[in-house]
Length: 404
Image (cartoon, rainbow, N blue to C red; front, side, top):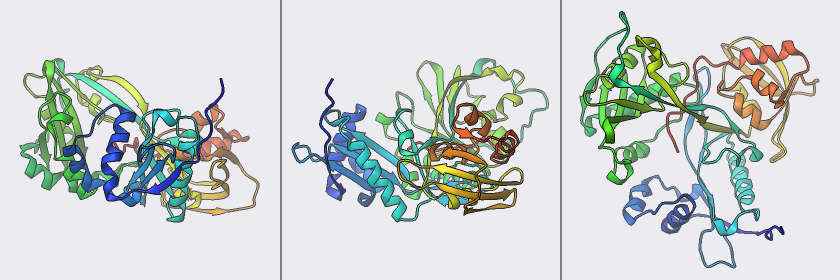
């Protein structure tokens, strides 16, 4: 089979007038239609300078490919925060596949981030096989659970602190952002939400509800949850952010006490969540899906590695390969629970890995030992690998909390 000829697309930044054409291109790629009302709802989140568009001079369509980003911050293990663009709305028209368009977009976008001094870039992937070649590594795991609420009982002695209360949308809108900021501060991998982002969340348009009700809101002084009631006596938890264990227990006691609900589903129960241990039968929290969640692309290795803390003392020379952008090199990393220093070095390397594997380690969501077994990390001395594995462990399972 003869491959299609490579295309040298015309790349440009979007303007405010491009949003309808961008919406049409996204709809063709992902199988939906953006109405004029959808476009106007989205416009407050649309920052044209962050949107890169491709045009084929031989095609009358003004947009054949898109790559954009949102301005986020992300929390590192230890609690420090880095600006981290969230790459989004990436698509190439089916008429222009396998012609080098995506590579051109990714190259231009990442070079722009480098010029802006960005150390880490994030994305969530619609398909798992696309972004590794551009240096992104799967950094967290999405876990979907379903709970058979009819048979749930909290174990005797489980905390019952109270304090959760129902609220209307206006009350929740005033309360949730502060809780979320506090939640982000204690969760590695957590992604920030701007005021514009929250406004978009609370629009809660009927055609985006998947057949469910409008959002119900639960508030706690140290927590926030929202959920929808759905067909067949189901409940889908959209957000659950608890800053304290009391808030966590109080919110779940209300959700799992809802009348006329048979099953509760959510992605807000990570692998280390204590919820199963609050119940008399932890098997009622049943995992129904596991998938890659947040992906990370490191553009400045010393800045990214020095921004986090390490569970144990570590002094290691790491050689990072980056065949796509050549942003790797050899670095000496010295870290402990109080902080870290990472600097270029000419010393002999103890560990070899590429930048995508380093992205998988950054938030502590994957183990170095596991990546080494997959031949993504090479550490000839097993003792060094054990130290790296222990040091990169995060204080809790990383959660990003916001799909984009």
